[in-house]
Length: 285
Image (cartoon, rainbow, N blue to C red; front, side, top):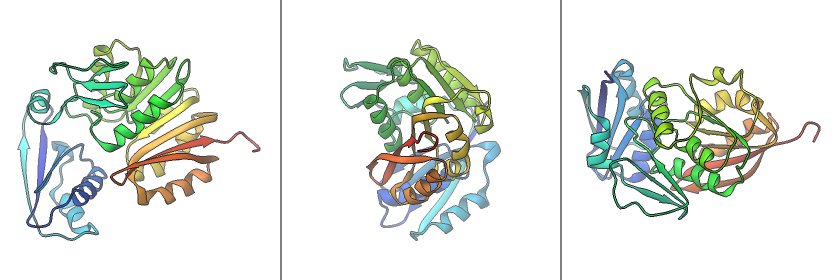
């Protein structure tokens, strides 16, 4: 049974989208998986075994923006997350007028080039978050036919599924969280695509061949720690697409990338969330 704790942070006055985005980013660093911001604050979710009251309160106290808050939490046992998403959160989304993301319960879906079915449960990645949309836009732009792709931290599998739909020959998707891994497997079946889905962390990259594209939509700290492993699995001349961080995090990421032979090609930003596209230089260049 997948039991979760919900952590609710109500801002007594002056709540802003910047504050809830910042809080969500900090909570993600300690294991929170899903976030529901509103005009009064933020509700976030973490698996029961990972819940730590002191750690959550320390995050809230350490935020650079100080606002008066009220914090509450509750155990949620055996919730049907698909039903919750259907009722409250997950609405169909169209990206670039070429890709629609929806769930099995949605009706009246527009006819576009790529139709992706996602039943998200608690896995991150429905296309609604800025970081997911930014990477989707990159993947719609680049030629993927007969290319190889590694998707690190695949979540629902949405990015890997689009790569396969766009003609990628080999797509390997890695997910550390077991329920999210199982969700990605289910979503691959829903979309009738063949993916190599691996339950593991960056150490799972070891047996994989280098890819033409390497995707990681995780968070700044994990990317910084594992970027060398990512670069080792990217072909010379290949592209690495990274997101899950803020615009102000870019300089430290580029500094790390430069030590690994990765040079910036472009970046896209929406509401301070940023996606970076890096090119791997050829040896000796």
